[in-house]
Image (tube, rainbow, N blue to C red; front, top):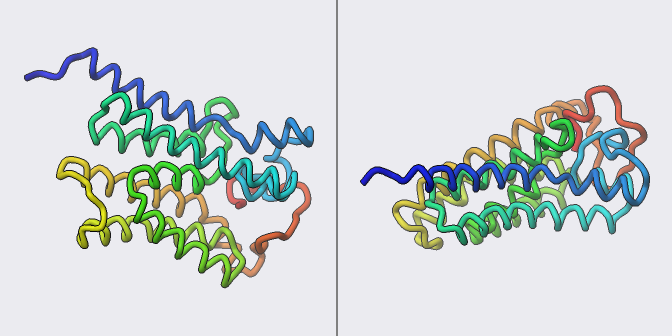
Length: 226
């Protein structure tokens, strides 16, 4: 049977809605509201939880983290509630992260997508995310580099999804499984690519450790900072 055009439009709307949801930059909004600053002009210049913490303190950073995770979870749960097929649910996961990284409401200058990816992939593959978070926290505890932990987590997550599927630890259907893995690979690539500048600074020994404050964002920091 040929798919209904109405359903096709509905599924496009779900993915577009996920992108718009991701485009709500909580880091920008909360730092602007509480400090009167554009978070993209201070610290690393990145509109994410870590830089919000540098700009406005741990409370604001924690709030941004939780809200960014919630965006990812909401995109998946809304898609499921609307009975979207696995391909559309996977596309919504990617779309909400792209919205966070390239927000249409804020000049396409957003964050690195780590927290929002965690929310989306946690809704899709909770056990795989839990194992990935364990790796993330071990790396951050050991090296005190959020960026290094994020890169390793992004590269690790698809491996954990594959491991959980092979061992039968996650219960995806045959139609769900390929799209979960594709979403995991895509989000992992986004995270790694957005941290290339951090990797260069890590190699040069100039990457700030967790808890270090920085002054006004340097040239290019908005594209490369954590």
